[in-house]
Length: 258
Image (cartoon, rainbow, N blue to C red; front, side, top):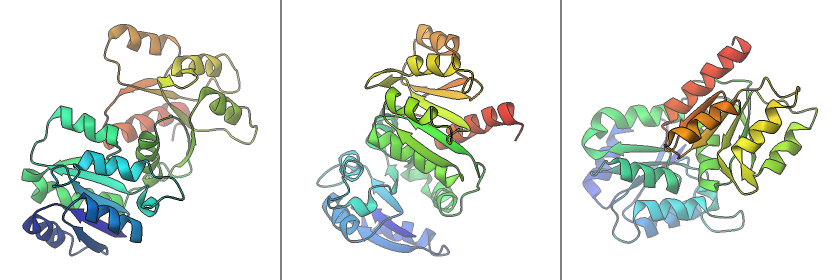
């Protein structure tokens, strides 16, 4: 797997590189966002370790540039790379910005000695906890599509991605398609995840499929409504990878006894 280390400090890049020396990876280095994008144009990166503090664009802007590329654009080779943000300023606000930009993980520089190698190893050598499971993901944000599908696929699941209620329903009316679980965003271009939930729960064929709703809402009324409409669970955004996998596993066990 190709890994790109992006940080303005040569000593930081050297330290990260040394921590990865026992892994079977090919390492590239870049000192700023411009160099990062050049590498991502020439090589297919599996992981981009991206400092938020850069000299030209910041890490959030750089990640968005990667995520928003189309198939015929430059840098598309690394469009689906897992992006790990590293920073000396670890705050909830920065984590939310990183999540919204399409980041897969967020590490504090002061703790890299204890967290970095294990984080990379888990991506390279994932435990296939969701083998043979099929996930329907209803999400219109390209960044979130990539983030969630990467997490699910690294755990062994196949992910079918749609962006609207209409597309989701077309999939669910296909007799050859029966997902193990459905993950839907609350806000969609043609309605809400609650409207999709109603259709699912009032249709006998799909009523037993667990549904997890993703939301940035914090108010009690919204959360209560999510459960009233029949959701199995909800997850607040931004979420961490381990939380998403744990929730999915929990509801699959309840539903299928896996």
